[in-house]
Image (cartoon, rainbow, N blue to C red):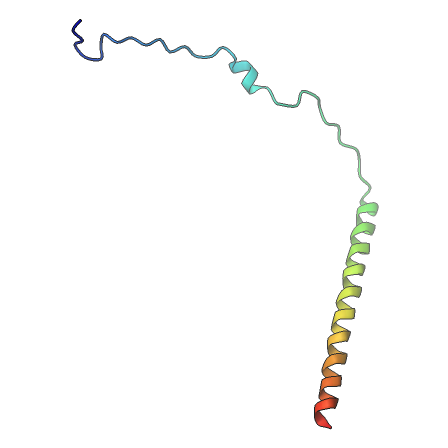
Length: 76
């Protein structure tokens, strides 16, 4: 009944056998990429930029008009 330290305590540590499973990717199917036409991407980008440009012009013209109206009001 006397323990002389940690040398008598044995613990069996086993490594798991599923090492090969952990190295496999989660998705087993290959994703095939479809070809994309560069002209379609350019047209989408140009369309979004034109919408953003129109919005910016509208905001800028509204601010200039408001500043002009305020200037005319204060000068009277």
